[in-house]
Each structure stands twice: as C-alpha cells, then as structure tokens.
Amino acid sequence: MGPDAGRALHPFDEARAAAAVRELLLALGEDPDREGLQETPARVARAFKENFEGLWKSPEEVLTTTFDIGHEELVIIRDIEVFSHCEHHLTPFHGVAHVGYIPRGKITGLSKVARLVDLFARRPQVQERLTTQIADAMVKILDPMGVIVIIDCEHLCMSMRGVRKSQARTTTSAVRGVLRDPATRAEAISLITKG
Image (cartoon, rainbow, N blue to C red; front, top):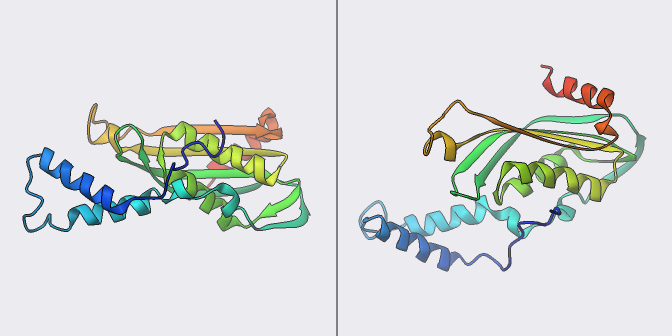
C-alpha cells in the first residue's frame, strides 16, 4: 500500500455530488425543496470537495521544500490536529498525529509535515492506512534515517452509531528505519508523550 493509495480517479464532479445528496435526502423521506434544505445539496457537495481535497494532491506537492543543514538528530512535530472521514461510513474521526524523523542531513519545513498529515487525512480513510501513508511518504520523499508516526483519534462511526462508545480512542503507529531500534524508539515516544 503506497503513499498514493486512495488517489481520485477523476476530478471532483460538484453537480453530480449535489444531485446525489438530493437523492439521499429523498431516500430519507425528506423534502429537499423545503426551506432549510434547498441549498443543502450544494453545501454538502462543497464541503465534501474541501473535506476530501487530499484525493487530488500528491505528497510530493506538499514536501517540496527541503533544506540541507546537516541535522541528523530527532525532529518531533507533536499534536498535529487530524480531521478525516472513515471510509466505511463517511463519518468523521478526529484527534492528533505525532510525527518524528531523524533526517539524513535534509529537513523539511515543520508546516510541511502538518500539511502532509492533512493531505492523507483529507481522503476517505482508515486510521491504520493514514498512519502508514504518512510514514511511507516521509521515507520516500525525504529519505530520513528513521520515521515514527503515532495517531490517536476518536471515531464518530463508533461514538455516535453502532456500539456508541463515546470515550473510545484508537491509537496507531508506524515506525521505519533506525527508529525501530528499541532505545531510539523509546526516546521518540518519550518526547512525544511529555508535556
């Protein structure tokens, strides 16, 4: 499963999306022409275009800026907000991502790492794939000595429907390169969890 898994097959069709939302409202027994719902299909289509904009971007577009500064120690970006949608129910999940890497002399801007998280989160997703895609894109594009990605989220598909467990959280991790070494991994996890 490479970093490009989940890319869109074609550009977003806003009119088709709005028509589908209108059909869904009809299937629910609602009147899409009543006050309050008249603009809903178009609004939902625009929201989906924004919420899933990662389908039309590649990680290479995000990690375009690198700096050769000779830094070869751990870099951690903590508490990056994550908003995504479960691909099974299209319900949101949200939480935080922590991304760490040991550069091989080449670093990227800190905001670029947060944008990479957003790129993959803004697709229909499962958290496990999201975690893996971020780590694999970092490895492919930056060629660091090691990468660690930890994501902790609440899934509304589990909180507001089904088992309705609103306090449940899911934590996933992906570890690559020298960060697989127990001592190095422990240092990274210590820096991520402090604070």
